[in-house]
Length: 274
Ligand SMILES: Nc1nc2c(c(=O)[nH]1)N=C([C@H](O)[C@H](O)COP(=O)(O)OP(=O)(O)OP(=O)(O)O)CN2
Ligand SMILES: [Zn+2]
Image (cartoon, rainbow, N blue to C red; front, side, top):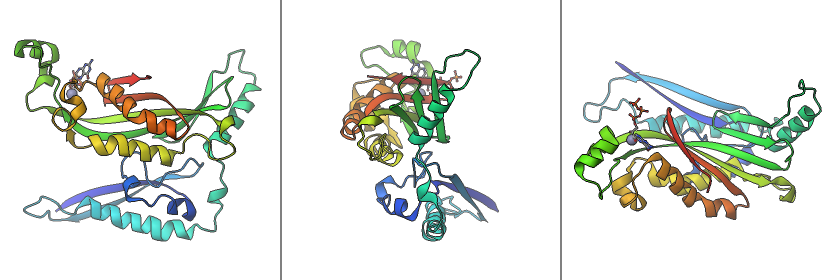
């Protein structure tokens, strides 16, 4: 007997917010949860454990997509509609809580120390930041993930030079990483005309999923991604490439792309700020 565990991550949104996020494309089951919210709402994980004998041919006990679908049917068709009468949709958004926190803290005695910034995390993957002295400039940082293979190699160098420079990372068949991508966008919320302030977490997730995650996930960067056919896919180059792929959609959404940070391993990251 084998047991298999699978979980989904989601924010407890109102039925109206769920309706606004029903496009297939944005329904990722990654660290950037779906449905998503900028509201101060619970961020939950729901997990199912199943047991049985794996299929002899596929090695699968159960396709995890089936478990996802069943869990999401419960959340979307039963849990969220049952909350329709709660006050979820009246909870404040992160930006206004952050502005209130900054105002409050600026009036506190902090032993003479200068307040630099305040941040608020809605989940381990979504946080907001505001710098003291710039209360209208709010930065949102959202974390995403993708898995990919790559090979560090320069055609212009000899085989010996490649091995000397890149070592095991020059292995001809490549090797893989679970990359983590942190995207930070900022906006002057005094110019937002009273609507949603920073580009919403939902809209940002859509832009990043379309331009980056759907493109790179489960690919061999050197072989499948044209950009890296003559650019070595180092973590430095990956962060710069992602910045370039996101910039115009983020700006079209009325924000500035502040930074893209890519973690190749928990010990190594690179960031690009334009
Ligand atoms: N400047 C850079 N150096 C290295 C990069 C890079 O992108 N920029 N990338 C790599 C490799 O991708 C390599 O796969 C990293 O893996 P590894 O060295 O195994 O990573 P660890 O941090 O786990 O290293 P250990 O030495 O095994 O602890 C290498 N360098
Ligand atoms: Zn590597």
